[in-house]
Length: 477
Image 1: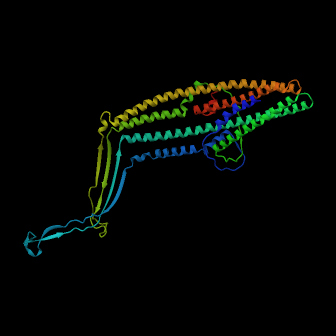
Image 2 (image 1 turned 135 degrees about the vertical axis):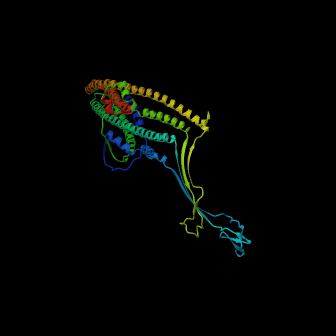
């Protein structure tokens, strides 16, 4: 019996630990029974997961940036209005003017005066009103490369969002099947408990009839009672994992849930080489590295374009009111431009051409990044192919184990059935049939474990190839 308890603990503890997942937030829902299959569970989790929602918002930022990237060709326009007055009033100006009373005559229609008189003029100390409008636009090859990088950044955001979704899907599916495995384990434990109850009653009856001693009856009772805490522990772990599962799916904690599914996998054979050749490029990490390689190529071109000239068009005007802004009418012809102009500028940074300059170093570093990502891509492809082969080897091992364990279960059931018949006939005592019971339970638990391992391997293969199981199964044998 201790061996049976050890079997259940060894198998179920990793499942319970693996299932205690993730981040999400529960949302209110009607407290009525819900029947959930694996696809429904995935759909609910994708809708409720906070991590996905944050990633989606980041993706929307990149989408908006891409959709409006043409605004780099908008001119920079600024406008201002200024009302000012000098702190110190203007100085008086002295001059000489003809004395009107000393006119001597005319010459060719121009008056001639005999003398002049001094005149002092003090300009008014008043406010000055002026406006300024300027616009400029710059054209360079760097703008083109910047727009391409914006498009690539959007694509990188799409890949990151898809990665987050795939991770949630994988975690939800594995947790779903974990729960199914634990449900089956509870059923097996309860069946074993009912068998123990039957054996105890038989031993008790035999003891009262004088067919067995008290030790045999007590041994059967101890075996029966020892199963109660085991079942309680499994149920507690199941309920804890189910709460985490509800939280992940955004379901109210008090809502009863019934899982609809099976852990009976369809056994198939897969060709690792064929799957790699067909679907390796579908992997999101490979797609991300391919995109990163393109981004570094574009960054290199961007840095090189900074060595080229830049064309700037500029227009400005600064009308200034010549009268008193508080006393004169604004909308007359008393406005005058001071420095308004239109200009075309072709500029080029000459220091970028100096060897070992900062710009030259940026170009060189961008070239090294290109080579670095090329190596990372090669390494990722090799690692991906190795991962696929490892998963398929695990599937083949689990498939073979399932066949052997099915036979073991049949043999253990037959041995246990024969032992029970001999026990009821009084030909064997409890200690002799206990071994057959433990062997049967161990065979059933091991078969259940391998079925889960096979299903988990299929999910890992689906995730590794970024391809649906239906498509993958279509290539199986």
